[in-house]
Image (cartoon, rainbow, N blue to C red; front, side, top):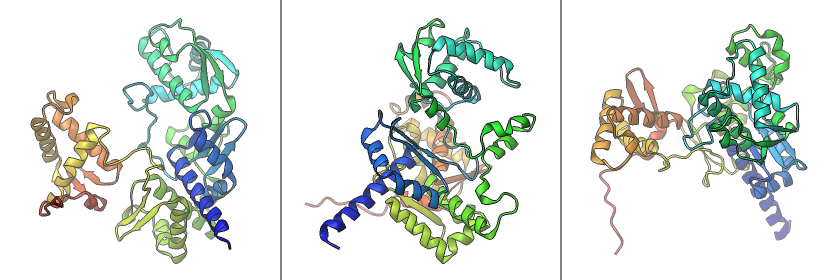
Length: 402
């Protein structure tokens, strides 16, 4: 093979790997938001579709004419670690009310390609009134309008609606605000990542919510209650690689017996390494578990270490205590966070009030648990194996080269 041919093959592999990591970090990529990323995905869509289907069992939909690519990620188990967040300054996670309004808005938007914020609000009022178990929507109340605006801004972020005239935020202060939307009904439909369409379980409305969600996320390709050997192996491969791609670190003691057996097999290890290589990750395999490292952080929506929040800075500072002192009581972590605030009175102003130390400690521990670096059991907090990479070596002096 000529040198030029080698360069073309290498460039193609690098583009596919970059596109895979982009879609993992942003499962919905739009032409108007990131033209370069969308063009890359459109250009390499066929190998991308095959990669996600083989290694993860995920479906990739690329719509060149409508200008978006949607990776339909389905988790093997439910997780609340990636909530939708409000697009306004607070960035607080969605509560139950906002999720409810988001679903009602999405359903009502399917009926018309153009609407106004007032018309949509009235249709949501009517829909909530006839849906059993859904609280009534009252746009006269300011807190209701705020939740409604948060749902609409999320849909704007997804590209499902576009404000052609007016601004969504204007509805916060004025129930009679005028905002005209163009609706991309196809994209609204694509937002739902469920193997089973909700219409198929409409008759099971009296079932508990966890059973309804379980039915929505059941994937028939794995055989249900009586899978074949091939289906069990397929589930083990997909579920394990999904966890490796979705979670910062995967510990062996958290795997199911089927996943552990697959990870220990020669074929399983070969496929995991191949998936990591083709996606441009560095695979770290240790006795305790696995980590996929993305050197340019394209595939993640959150970073650590990161000075983007006070909680992340505190998490890094508290991590040395957890690593060096072993399991400690939660009260000691609270005291350490309180001491941090005392030493740096101009830092973390939101936590400088009474009770700020325990609140900072709680938020920092949430960060550490999210990144698989610590675990809280009852009243004790312990560092997990991956935390050792952040340990400070106090006996090493750094000398400047003269």
